[in-house]
Image (cartoon, rainbow, N blue to C red):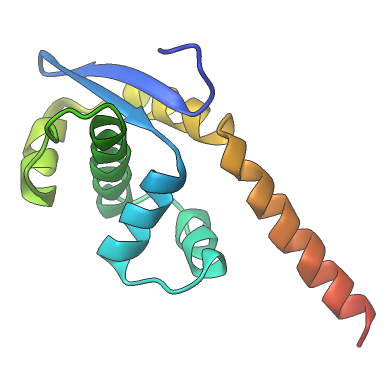
Length: 123
């Protein structure tokens, strides 16, 4: 795993996948899912884990990393990403989630919750 916050490296079926939980990740995920707000995004993440979520997260984080580094995308589409994840394990999941919980943008989750609490106080 990379040492910088929000990055991960995993090897699945002999293929190295590097991902970055960045603003670019959130924007790509937002575009794929058609969300309009940060609250919708965090609601999606908080639903629990599904195969679709794992695939979307890996696709968007790896695409963000490649675009930020000026590299061609690792996967041309979500289906290619899904095929590459055939050997995805609990260990891979734990590495990706450690990068997610360590990313700088996780502060937005707290900020949204704090804002909602403040709004509730005024009612």
